[in-house]
Length: 349
Image (cartoon, rainbow, N blue to C red; front, top):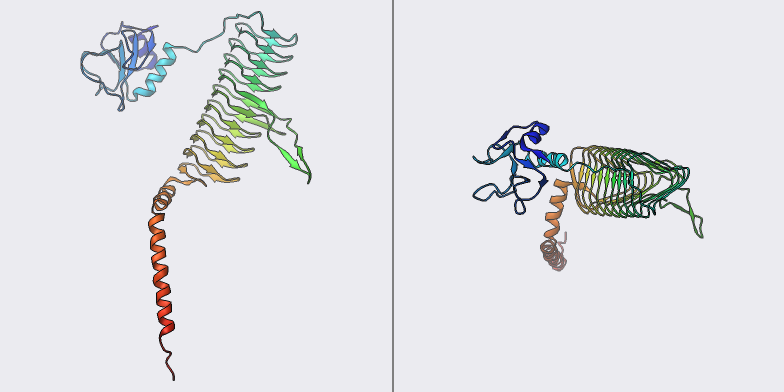
């Protein structure tokens, strides 16, 4: 709960209107009430009449006279920042359900919430203020930093390491064996999967994702990375800071994705690929093994290629039926010309 003036001060932004108005929630325009904060950008229609909320974040040009508004050059970004102040990240209070199981050699720091059915194995460590929801399993020797939130049925295999303020949503498994085998001519022989997995600070991982441990080295997810639902990250993958990966993407072993890259949904990576800093890969693209996706461009398609090239090829693909008809006509004409040449008498010297 914050007043408009207090919130504007936290955001370091100017405001107009009633600074004493109390805000308790964020909402869309349709569900807003007098305690709501909403925002207005180029994709939102303001409608007519009075403001339906306690306050709006809008540009100075869009904010109407008589509205209580926090003035911003980037309303959507500042709305997200404001939401983090109005709805601060939950922290544990120290509540332990009677069915939670804590091994004798585990360390659970103060203010950690343990819900029903939580299991914390020997030599594991759970940092101050973390929240473990029902059915979470923390494997032998795993480490959680401070303020982590693990939603129902999250499983950390032995030795997984999570930094501070990591959020993992329901059903995700971190630290399972990678998919590595060597064929001996008759059967697949499992390659050792004895490495580690490290999730750095402020990472958020969606529901039912899987992040495998390294085979001999370490799988690493960089600070601030955001990983969507149903993403598979294989052994020894290295993901940089603030990388965004959308749902159903599959990343094969030893791939490197550098800082600030953006990966669309259903992208498939072959092993040992590399995505350079800040590159953007569109949905359903295919990155071949060993491919280097260069920095500063947008890529699309299978196999992945720069977006301009993909658009040209896609336009040509749409013309394939006409091009086929034209090719057949040209072939017939060439055959006719060849037959005419054969029928012509040869000059005799």
